[in-house]
Image 1: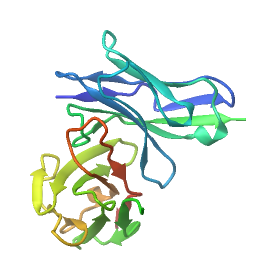
Image 2 (image 1 turned 30 degrees about the horizontal axis):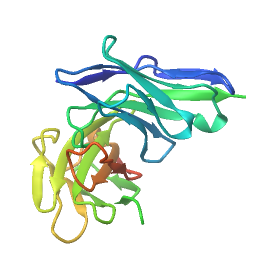
Image 3 (image 1 turned 90 degrees about the horizontal axis):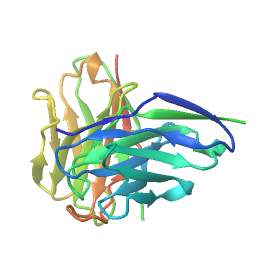
Image 4 (image 1 turned 60 degrees about the horizontal axis):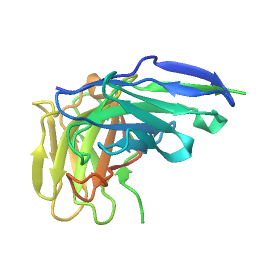
Length: 114
Length: 116
């Protein structure tokens, strides 16, 4: 069975500071990993995905994530936070390249202060 | 190209009533997935459908919940005899195909069901 653990239900940063959102996964097969962002009362938007190509994945809005098999991690980073980054972020894992059945973490709410 | 459309956005039902949630996938998409998000939790997979077929319903509660995706029209998630614990946000996602690395599932804005 697959699972995802997101450390920290809330992360607070100042505008311009580094953003680091943690995600660790458990999977018995090579995983496919995703980060989604959810703005209030909105659906989920795909930020980036890892599908066994490059281990450093660049996504939209300046976000990137690095797949580290030895650490079973897929942490999300952004060098400089912007106020508009305030949202809920979800890490998800799948055992297939297609998006059939995602297992989501519980989410991390990112708060950005001026 | 309109995105995934879900309606209604908000739905209030009394205990014991039925709730019908609709999802129109993006144009050209034949795969639909339903997820449920309970308060303060991540999304949980419920069911995966293709046109006229249920492919995977391993996340569906055994009773009161059903889903369909007819040849014509939207996908419907139906909850009979709702209880307070059914209160959640229900999200639908659609994709054009499966098993390809460049496939992306697009999510709708969700239906927020409140059972009173």
